[in-house]
Image (cartoon, rainbow, N blue to C red; front, side, top):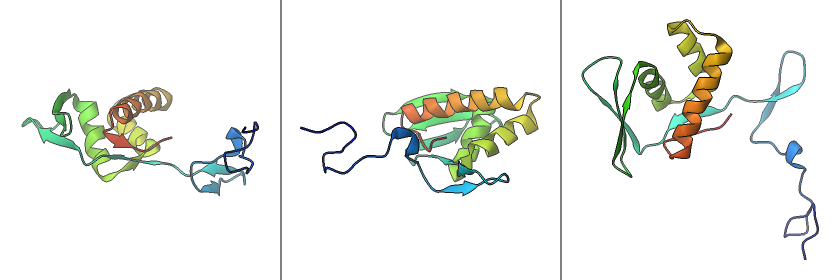
Length: 125
């Protein structure tokens, strides 16, 4: 029988709040914070231009699913080809559109979560 707070190996597990997803660094105030995560399109996600500079198609080569992308999604998808942090994506959106940082961040997180759910992007915040 496994006792609460222990793994199957008999070692104690860290409480969930103490587990980290990666290296941590100190911010200007000296407290630890997680490094920004890099989001990147998976190799199976292919971008196909439709001839216009700000729109195109996202093709999932595993499922043969094709999605039409609007200008904002197309801009983000192209940035995700080489990888970007959430804050870099937010900066790009607010640099092009008049929107508040918090709203842009929330919308981009929804977009990234949808892409991750279908396996087209890797990363986490």
